[in-house]
Image 1 (cartoon, rainbow, N blue to C red):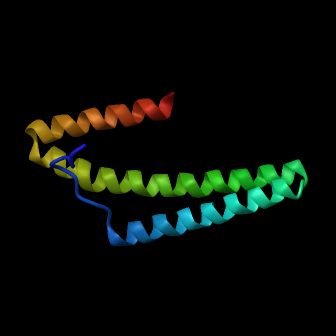
Image 2 (image 1 turned 30 degrees about the vertical axis):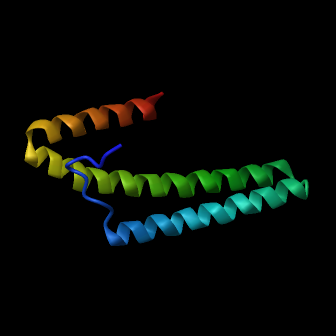
Image 3 (image 1 turned 45 degrees about the vertical axis):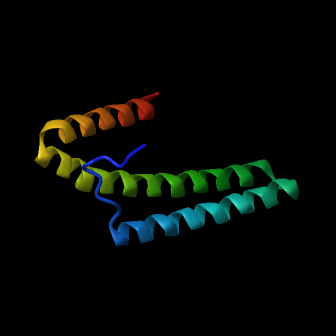
Length: 99
């Protein structure tokens, strides 16, 4: 798939924050694996699942914000085909989230 004409990339500070959250989630997943292997108390393991979800949701929110503030805004300003393309992307993204 080719890069859309309106693609802008990820701001450096946003990229750093996303990578930090993903590293935290990776560490938490590894912790969950150890907890399962050790047959730890289920509610304790489930609490760690919630922490992983929170870390991933935070990273996802940062990336979505970056996309809306950069790529989407740029495409709307360009108008025409880029604006139509980004509108379709947003509809697809929203559809995936509400299912």
